[in-house]
Structure formats: structure tokens, C-alpha cells
Image 1 (cartoon, helix red, strand yellow):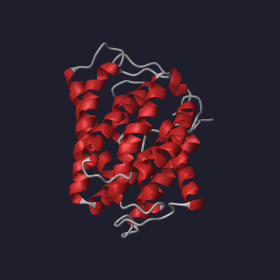
Image 2 (cartoon, helix red, strand yellow; image 1 turned 30 degrees about the vertical axis):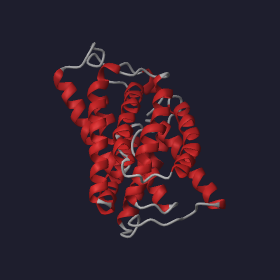
Image 3 (cartoon, helix red, strand yellow; image 1 turned 120 degrees about the vertical axis):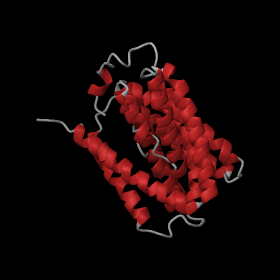
Length: 277
């Protein structure tokens, strides 16, 4: 994710008026798999969906903007399922939005103008560490506790959400996982409840703001949206359904796997974008 990506032209495949049937099928199933896993783990859709967009020929800015727009459908699909369970406390939800949305806006202003190889490296190490930490903490997120909901702890929690929001607006892989683990570790939510907040608030509102901001700065491939939106909506609903059906153990395990994979991907991206000479 370097400034050179901004001016890189899309190849001839991405400049076609529309998608072939095969490409549309690839987009649909990539979005379905990515968003089903993301809805189970509370983040990580960009781990698979963004590379597919790049593979099909989009430049990085166009792929990121297109991915952000499509990822809102993940929030819609998951919201439909989670709202039926009545798990969200709206006062706390508004707190997450109030702290996170300004960070998202800041991140969208930063990503298209700043070389972030160091951010990828640091975030990769941290994301990988989150997966390992959760794996080594069997009791983490298996039951709900009320932690840091007032005073200094609440303000620090909000500051953490602001920083994660900035990462969400600027980077594409794994930032939803940060929200999930922050809600679990700092505020004491269990994994299923934390994923509910992440998918509804991050998937719908944070990603919605990021999509609007990025779409005015980089081209969005609207002709690719039907396949992406269909896969994202269905995947978001299915992942949320299985999370509620199977409970904290499955959500925790999927979170750990995706956190490790997202961390490794970010580290590999940092190596690929490392300045030569």
C-alpha cells in the first residue's frame, strides 16, 4: 500500500465494460466465503475479498474503495440476523460509534497519501499476536463481564476504539478483528456478543463511512457490485446465524484462525512493499 499504487493503471482486464460470467462467479463465491468467515469471527473479510479484486485487475485504490462499498452488505446481512436476537445495548452501541467514526474518517484521509509499510508491519505483528494470545487464553470471551464501563477505563476504551477506527478507514485486512478482541478483552464481552457489535456497528456504520469517503477519492467498480453484494449479504447472514447457533467456542476458534492469517498477510504485504535500495 504505497503512494505508487495510487497512480498505477488498471490492466486491460479491469478496464472492460463488464465482467465475464466466470469472473462474476469467482467474485460471488469469494465474497460469500470471505463474509461468512468474517461474520463468524467479527472481521477479516478483506483477507480474501481484496486480493481477489486485485487479481481480477483493479488497482489498489479502486480495489479498496470497491471492497469497502461491498463490505457494507456484510453489515446489512449480519444486522438482519443479530437484531432478531436483541443482543445489542444501544447506549453502548452509540458509544462505539461516537469514538470510532471520527477515527474512520481520519484513516480514509491518510491511506491514499501516506506510505504505510511500517503500519503494515506493526499491524501484522499485532494481529498475529492477537490470534496467538486468544489461543493461549482458553477462558477469554467465554462469558460476559462488565469491565471498564465508567470513569478513566471508559475513556481509555473509547480512545482504543478511535485508533482502531483509524486503522479501519486506512487498512483493509483484519481491523474488524481488533474491534472484536478489544470489546472482549477491555469491556468484558463474550465472543458472540462482541461479534454482534462488530458486525452491526463496524460492518454497517464504520465501513459505510469509509465507503463514502473512499468512493469520492478512488474509482468504484459499480458493475462488479451485484456479485459482490449478493455474496456479502448472504455470507453476512449465514456467518451471523452460525455464530449464534454454535456459540462462543466456534466464534473464538474462527477468530483465532483469521487473526493469524490476517497477520501473516499483512507481514507478507509489508515485505512486498518494502523499499528497495
